[in-house]
Image (cartoon, rainbow, N blue to C red; front, side, top):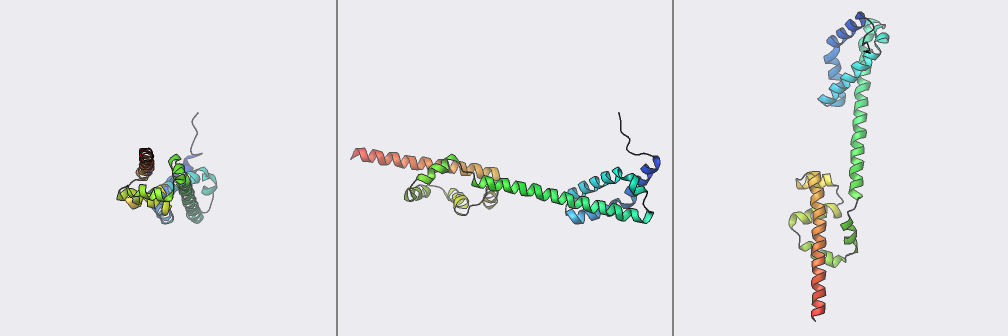
Length: 186
């Protein structure tokens, strides 16, 4: 069963004329609100869907009331799209924050290592590795920030950090084993 979009030819003509006459004005308005071409196009598309759904009510308005009424729909739709994008961005940021405090199993082991021993191990690392470690632990940056500061992607900085922690543990364990050997050699 196919649903009819318009109840009459008059409605179809009305909507076509509205689109042809005001499309660029509506787009500019949506763009001013969203500041993004694609979001403005989305807003315009959604607004025309809403106008189509309410075609009976809109087509019964006085001719001079139609453009302002439709403009209000476009503005509200653009604002809704911006709010939705902000919620999505906030959710992504919150996920980033959670991942900031998510600790890797190796980090828990590092917490038990004496600070002096840890400093000795850190001196064994390269400059970039020490920089990443400092950004993450000292400055408490999230991986996307580390990526920006080191010119790596977020995922690459996260992976580098994980490998760095494992390397740090390996350096520590190697030092402990050597200390044990020295103890038994004496």
